[in-house]
Length: 230
Image (cartoon, rainbow, N blue to C red; front, side):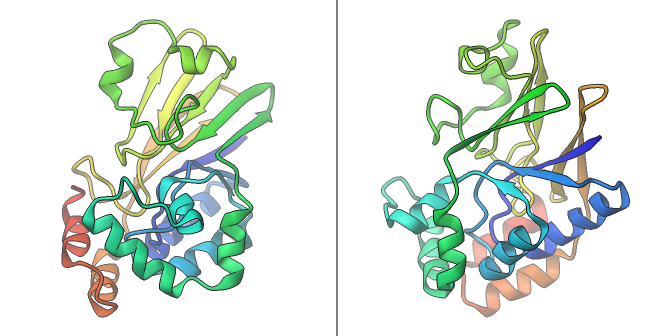
């Protein structure tokens, strides 16, 4: 069975729809999302509705949590402006959906224990980069302590996977705002039979999203970075 792994959609319903078309072609039925459904991009309500309609399993990201709690203490100016706009347009039912999400989730599929969290299990807002993992040949304590076969992270918007004897740590990358130099919408696939993860990209209409960002008067920097994946 193939499971779709995604993260950091950030209100980019256009990019998400492109990935879902790929998933449909591959007959992916289960999709796990490592947080940040909203933020940065101009389609928060549309994106949440897709999550509901497609039964995408998600945990809270820091932008989702900030929308609920109104705590934006660690937000940079761009993120703060985007969140304020998002908060002004998100409807009550969509806000209620976000309130129902958890900080961390554990799934058992075909004998695999899969953990999903936005930052890391020891700190939901922690940034985990590839360099933090590849320096060690042993599984990091925050993964081995929970006996995960697969740990799915987000938050950095950088796509990577690191394999250990005990299991895999994967960041499927950002669907809606990649920051690793590749502007394609990022995702990963888990084959539960082989227990292998593969990393992928999907093309989408960047210019439509860019135009809509500018139309609702979100910061122009948010539009420009979609072209370059930075």
